[in-house]
Amino acid sequence: DRETLSEEADLAFRQAFAFCPYSPEAVFRYVQLLLQLNRTDDALLVAQTCLKLDPDNGQVLGLVNSIQSYKKQAGGIGQAIDKLQRRIDKFGTTTTNIQAVLDLADTFLQMQQTNRAIQVLDKAASDPGADTGVLVNVAQQYAQMGNVPKLEATLERLVKLPAAGPEAWYDLAALKAGLSKSSEALAVLKQALELSTERLQRDPKARDLLKEARRDARFDTLRQTPGFKNLLSE
Image (cartoon, rainbow, N blue to C red; front, top):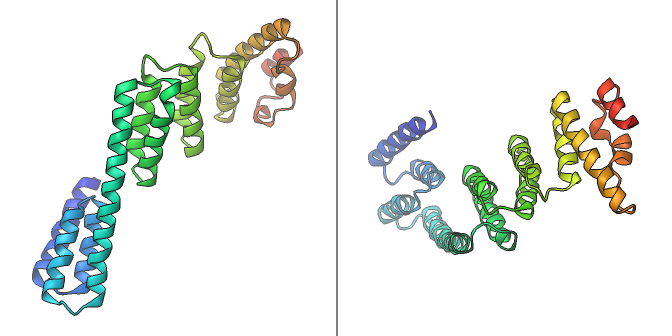
């Protein structure tokens, strides 16, 4: 697995460095691996050791300076992460606090730590205090990430909330249609159209999802099915 490969690579580079600690090629490659493993202190130590052995090497000096700058930047990011996490822990996952959750997820994405970003978003979506505002924002984040399974799961959580409007059902139906889950898509779309009709009876100026479904390209895979035709003829 990846962990085993990383350990083997670490051993190989460590041996190469021990054999020739003043070799720029061995040092640069080993430092790159250590940075990928988030072992910044070890990377800096390797580079500084090489510099001591070859103090006039401008490339190695530049490498040391680069690692020090990276370490300082990472420290600032770490402080930002801690601050956001404390805010989330203090105020919980609510619509008024959702920006902290999104900022934390964005920070992890910028650090290319996608799994940690997903953990933050999943925790927010599954929080008992998560309302429609929270789930809508989490769903939008997953849509931007292109993570369809997580987007589908979040929308399914959203439609279970009493306050979820017809649009939530409608978007879930469109997503399921795109995933070729025809029977599920039709069942969800039926609920969306029923809720939309009820809303129109209360507010004739409201968005008419039945009209939109008739021209929405996301439902093209269903358009010729009897079930879809029945829904749109009601």
